[in-house]
Length: 188
Image (cartoon, rainbow, N blue to C red; front, side, top):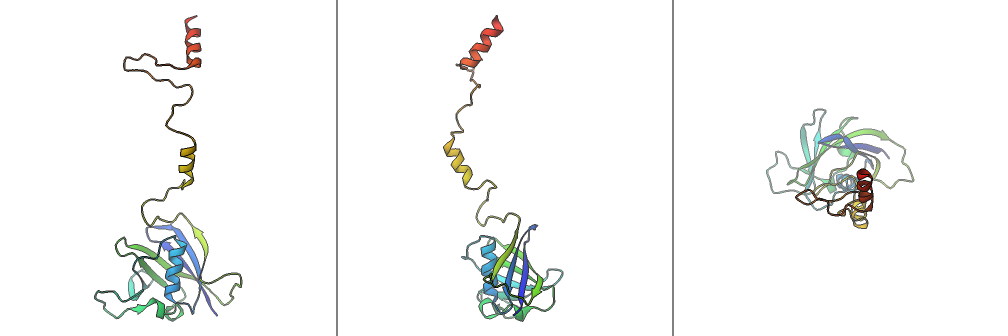
């Protein structure tokens, strides 16, 4: 059984990609679900694949379901179409589009074919991750959720030691003992 390895690039930043290994007998629906899992997207929106060429032109469409729009040729359905049946050359490319309102677009490229199946892997599987995935809804911070915990633990709104406040006339409003000692030394 052939194992196909696809590199799935985020269209807007090619340094962000995921490698997915999948059996040639599995369907495009399996590939669709593994891309969403690899990029931590939910599975709530419409999606489609396009067979493509080296210039990333859109060809035959392979959709999650038949959508209410005009097609030049009837689309193939993901759950009924095996990946192996749509491989035309050793560097086969597909364009994957998810959530037609936000137009998330990924470039899918076949990068390896092997006959050896790894018994430790459950296919399809993400075998490599590069770069920080885009956030499906809003922004995804580099610090993550842990920063909010730190912010709550240490009240960052209080002034730090050694810093005082002045009123509008520039008079000190209680600088603390260290500042008072420094002022006494300056007067002497």
